[in-house]
Amino acid sequence: MLPRARRTVRPSSLYTLRLADDEDEEPPPPWAAPIGIANSIKGLLEAMRGERFERKVTVLGSTGSIGTQTLDIVRERPGNFSVVGLAATGRNLDLLVEQTREFRPQVVALRDASRVDAFRDALQRANVPEPAHIGGGDAAVVECARHTDAQVVVTGLVGCAGLLPTVAAIEAGKDIALANKETLIAGGPVIVPLVHKHHVWMTPADSEHSAIFQCLQGAPDDALRRITLTASGGAFRDWDVSRLSQVTAADALQHPNWNMGPKITCDSATLMNKGLEVIEAHYLFGADYDDIEVVVHPQSIVHSAVELQDTSVLAQLGWPDMRLPLLYAMSWPHRLRMESMRSLNWVEVGSLTFRAPDRRKYPCLDLAYAAGRRGGTMPAVLNAANEVAVEMFLKESLPFLGIPRVIELVMSRHDTSGWTTEPSLDDIVSADKWARTMASEVAASQHIQA
Ligand SMILES: NC(=O)C1=CN([C@@H]2O[C@H](COP(=O)(O)OP(=O)(O)OC[C@H]3O[C@@H](n4cnc5c(N)ncnc54)[C@H](OP(=O)(O)O)[C@@H]3O)[C@@H](O)[C@H]2O)C=CC1
Ligand SMILES: CC(=O)[C@@H](O)[C@H](O)COP(=O)(O)O
Ligand SMILES: [Mn+2]
Image 1 (cartoon, rainbow, N blue to C red):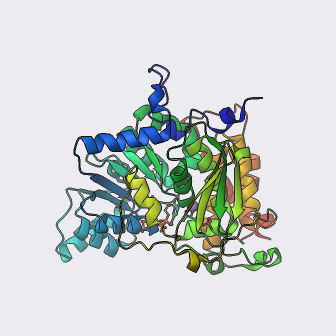
Image 2 (cartoon, rainbow, N blue to C red):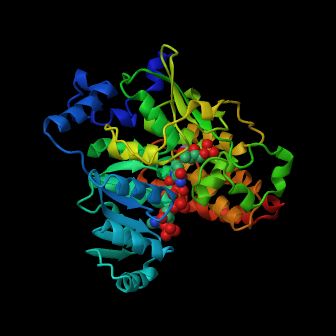
């Protein structure tokens, strides 16, 4: 058996990125190996060159929960951040116009091309100068993601729709502040090597992965022994499992601690969000699935923890406020002060409690572990089936308990002949497409609806 250190942190971990050797490249110099040294060198070089820390940012999903909080950061730290591009669907035109007025992006993309004319009209009515580029459709979102001037792309759009824009941004040499976890779940086998190839940084904005990332600063890259992801337990954490057959979308959207978009809020209620985060942690930190555990922590103050080889446990704490992980993802390795962010008050927090997740109540968690362990295109299939099932549940055309049933059936029908653990982007995109069709069919069946 391999020593534990070798099993837990593989060289494919994203944080050996610039340190990892491409096959035809020199192996990394010994000084480059520990993450802490690499971080301080990056920050030190900037300081030695007398550079002011400034980053040009593109925000994909600018009108959503992640997008608006990212722009709150830009608003509060204009000396450090400026906006190059904004992308949204075009559903919320007023907000997009207001963001264009305030942040003066060079490029705005509307996924719904039919909204472009209305956007131009609204800009004119509001006396807002037109950005240099306005585009519509999926291709425009991809163009926005790779627009020349941006250094960092914050991925705040929802679902696997983030995959191709993220690939384009990486290929264009942008650093990625990753909120859109579905992209890494589905595309991990392609995204991880691509990040290495293009020597970009992918910093996690998801609160748990940001916590892990923060705890690993300064640790040698073979130091990680185990990851503990904390879960709030979602809307139904205090509900008896017997009541879940009756719950509505409105019930599922009552998150106890976080104010987020509808899709992720529903994922929190099924614990699929945590399942997706297990797979996300696997790709980001190179940890084996056996070394990633989930605990329910109803207060959402401890955002996750790592155990190091010597059993020392490091955790990151803070109020449930996404601006902190977003700020760190955008400014790493710097630490910027935000006056609007409140210091943690230990006495106000009072007690921190932890318990094991009820696996009967949350079958999505085990489905995600199974998909992650299978690897290849199975996580893409899990994710796509979940996206379809959640959308149907939110439209009240699928019962809550139908969500895991749909996912399990679609996974069981995924053709694994000619199986590869290293699928291409095309393989992933077709698996995603197949799973969506299959999920819609399966979800309509009497057996699932019962
Ligand atoms: N919210 C949070 O606190 C957290 C979110 N995440 C992840 O971040 C991502 C975003 O979540 P959240 O902000 O809650 O979602 P929201 O639903 O609040 O916002 C989604 C945003 O993406 C836009 N959008 C959706 N699809 C597309 C597309 N195909 N092309 C361009 N823009 C698109 C929406 O535009 P429009 O407004 O026009 O519809 C909106 O601006 C998800 O992957 C989620 O899992 C991770 C951790 C925490
Ligand atoms: C804020 C964030 O990162 C979310 O992913 C959050 O973790 C959701 O809460 P749950 O712990 O309920 O999934
Ligand atoms: Mn999270």
